[in-house]
Amino acid sequence: KDLGKRRDNIDQLELENRKVLAQEKIWKRETDELRSLLDTYDRQETAQSKMPSMATENVAGLQISLKSARDEIKLLTDTNKKLEMTMEEMKSDQNTAKSEHERVLEKFQKLRSALMEERAKAEAAEARACQAETLAGKGSYNAETTRVLHLETNPLMEAVREKFQTEIDALKLQLEAAQDGRASKSPSVGTTTPASSRGSLGSAGTDVDVQKMHTRLKERFRMQIALFREGVYLLTGFKIDMIDADSDSPQFRVRSIYGEREGDHLMFRWPKKKQTLEIMGTEMAQLLMSAHSPCSVYIRQYNSFPAFLASVTMQLFDQQTNI
Image 1 (cartoon, rainbow, N blue to C red):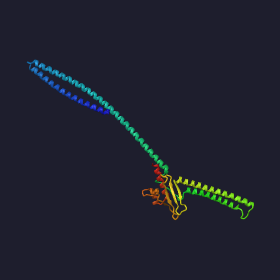
Image 2 (cartoon, rainbow, N blue to C red; image 1 turned 135 degrees about the vertical axis):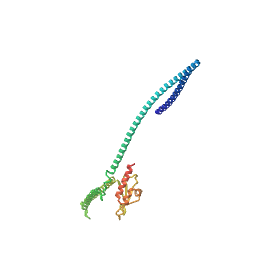
Image 3 (cartoon, rainbow, N blue to C red; image 1 turned 180 degrees about the vertical axis):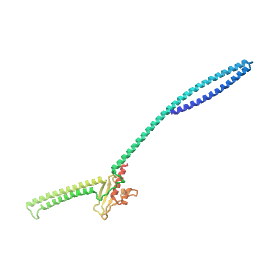
Image 4 (cartoon, rainbow, N blue to C red; image 1 turned 60 degrees about the horizontal axis):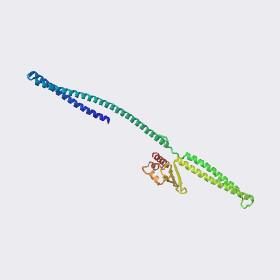
C-alpha cells in the first residue's frame, strides 16, 4: 500500500513539474517578445528623437515588466528544482521499497520451497510407513518372483495330530490295563467268604478309580480340544464350529478374526457322498460370491476353498487397516 501511495505522489509531482516547465517556457517566450519590443522601442527612440519623454516611459514600463517576468521565472526555476529534488527522494524511497519487496519475496520463496520439501519428505515417510505396515501384515516378498506353495497336508496339523494320537493311545492302554486289573480282582460267582467280601470292596475302590480316571481323561480331552481350536483360530484366523456332526451332511460355521460384526460368518456343508464342500448362502457368502468380488474367482474357476478363505482373510484385513 505504501509503495502504491508513493507511486501516486511521484505521478502527481511529475505532473506538477511538467506544468511548471510549460509555464517556464511560456514566460521565456513572453520575455523574448518583451525584449524584441524593447529593441523595437530602442530603435524608435533613436529614430524619433523628438519624443524623448514618451519613449522613456515606454522603456521604463517594459523594463519593469521584464524584471517581474525574470523574477517569476526565477521563482518557477527554484520551484522546479525543489520538485526535482523531491522526485529524486521519492524515487530513492521507491527503489528502497522495491528492493525490500524483492527481498521479502525471495525469503517467501525460500520458505515455500523448504515447506514443499518437508511436505514431500513427510509424504514419502508416510508412504514408507504404509508399505512397511502392509509388508508386516502380509509378509515381505516379491509378488512377481514368489509363488505360494500349497501343501496337500499341513505339517503342523500332522505333528499336532501325531502328538495327540500318541497321548490317546497311551491313555487307552492305561484304561485297558485298569479294566483288566479290575476283572482279575473280581470274586468268583456264588462264594461268600470274608476274602470275597474284601475282594468286592477292592472292586468298588477300583471302579471309583476308573471313574475318576475317565473323568480326568474327558477333562483333559476337553482342554486339549479347546487349546487346539484356539491355536487353529490364531494361526488361520478362522474359528470353525461343526454342526450336525452325526448327520449325513455335517455343516461348518466359519467366523473370521477380522470380521466387522460378530454375526458375520460363512456356512459350509459337507455331504458324505461327495468329496468337496458346498458353500451355503449366508449374508456374508452372498457378498463374497458376487460377480464383482475377487474372492469368488477361487471357487468359481479353481474350486479351491483354502485359496478362497485366504482371499477372504486378506480382503477383511485390508478393510480394517485402510480405515
